[in-house]
Length: 84
Ligand SMILES: NC(=O)c1ccc[n+]([C@@H]2O[C@H](COP(=O)([O-])OP(=O)(O)OC[C@H]3O[C@@H](n4cnc5c(N)ncnc54)[C@H](O)[C@@H]3O)[C@@H](O)[C@H]2O)c1
Image 1 (tube, rainbow, N blue to C red):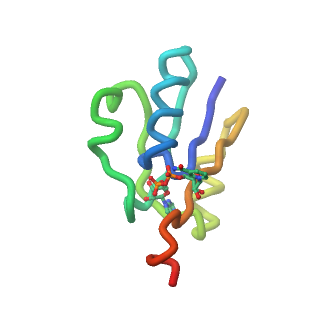
Image 2 (image 1 turned 60 degrees about the vertical axis):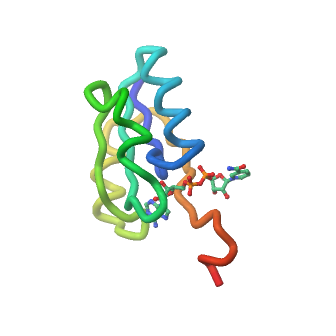
């Protein structure tokens, strides 16, 4: 199974990524690294694909969606001050 996790370098997404990699899933992370960190994925970096990009870019989203069976969408600005 191939899974796309948007916001996969964030707090929740990186734990999701680890969980599904450990289940043997093929995991693709799409993240613009605004608040997410590469270090969150460093322990599993050889076991998944990391794409730096923004979910507002339709062509990148189409590209990373290719062949995916499921998507976990977590990319968001979780911080209220940052949104304001
Ligand atoms: N952490 C919590 O307790 C909690 C509770 C309820 C809901 N949520 C929701 O879960 C989601 C993830 O939360 P989190 O705590 O992991 O936040 P986080 O900030 O750690 O993760 C969000 C990730 O999305 C990425 N991102 C933001 N905008 C993006 C964009 N336009 N394109 C690509 N990537 C983008 C960030 O770089 C980051 O890696 C959010 O929607 C949040 O509101 C979180």
